[in-house]
Length: 215
Image 1 (cartoon, rainbow, N blue to C red):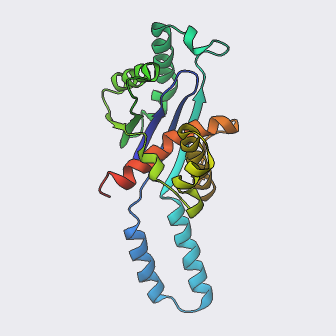
Image 2 (tube, rainbow, N blue to C red):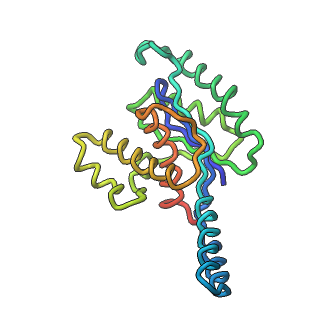
């Protein structure tokens, strides 16, 4: 399944486009069957390499970006109409062409609390723009459960950072960087600080798949 996932904002609007298939049971079954028929160290090494490549294909980070719709303009100076129209035009001109030929795609949008009314406007507009697609609103705390290594557990970042926002952001950035190293990523280069917003958009995909969806 393909996933287009959004981290809602106006100055740091971010998205990721990915393919994720966490059902690896069939890969493990095939590996065991093939392994039983192999003889000799060279054959086993070749088999391990073959299935290593297959395992790497369970996640493919296809695209992503962080966009400032109003460079050099403070967020509190942007009116509602301009904010929504700018984002909508970006979706129609840049994002929709990327997914037109993808048949199996779901749209993930981070749920926004009512107090964050500017981001909530963006998320509401996204729901309308993708009305023809399967859209899911994702609880932002789900991604905090995801970790790649012991050091990547959320509890370590809670201890390290003085506020929850920084802990959440650094946790997502840390684990996303590991995922980009392990699996294939075609997301273009960004500034290090911007990568965290793309990380948020993708880590919520894993949060949903690992902790809410029956795989």
